[in-house]
Length: 380
Image (tube, rainbow, N blue to C red; front, side, top):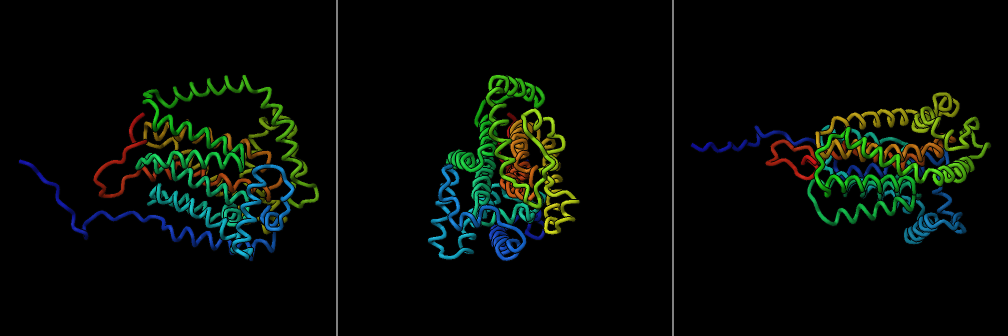
């Protein structure tokens, strides 16, 4: 005798988990733009936004600076209004985040890490005004949406979109873009590549050996690049006349940078210290944000190791975690000298810190759904 499943009547159906509305994303970004322009700008400078508005970078020769300047100039000419120009950049970032929310089907408890990031002033202020940060954030959100969406529902157009986003991010913030490129490579390996039945630990040892070999080959050039270009450039950005510059920090060699990571990396993520925030109360919200960011990073790392066995866990532990490590090491020279400027630099990658929650949300089965999603849910 065949037993047919009983259909649940609406009163007894399993409740749908609450998601995150796209309209609320746009409304939140508009609020951040208004706050940044009319409130925050009265107490502190809006980074490079005013410089782009005034054309201060017209003589710059770097491609990324020229590109952002031309985009800002074009938007200002079309908008005929400074606020509308800021809103145009803000809406680009908001559209990327909305795309991520749609593709990840953010629901249930997975929405809280995303909401936490969106509500942080460290993120909201710089994501909603003219500048490289809002462009990078928009591209990063599209990239994250394309990858989680591809594993959940497929779609060949998502992969070219991810590649284009990586190219754009590499142009705007080269080290961060390179880390995203590495992550995309690992993503393709686990989604489109051959199945590998080795454990996470065994694969980690193999990748570590390959990474060590590559570093041994390129170390001389990498060491020279960091010591002679990156570190002097980072230090030159911050003048001793700034009230927030940490004049006691000295990173002059690659060895000094690497040996100091145990304290410079947490300090860079934290932003202003309690003493600095007390001396300059406008920094107090950013101190609270820094503590939240460190907490979210810890939560994401735990989520990565607790992800379902197979491809999801391997991608997060062997793809996402190394990419985050590269980003944080590259961020330290630009985040440790001046917490104010460091906050602006960090806004670019904050979304990526919660990638595990977005990936797991896209894999989570909705109550009453007829089948389990495929893609990364398969063991590879």
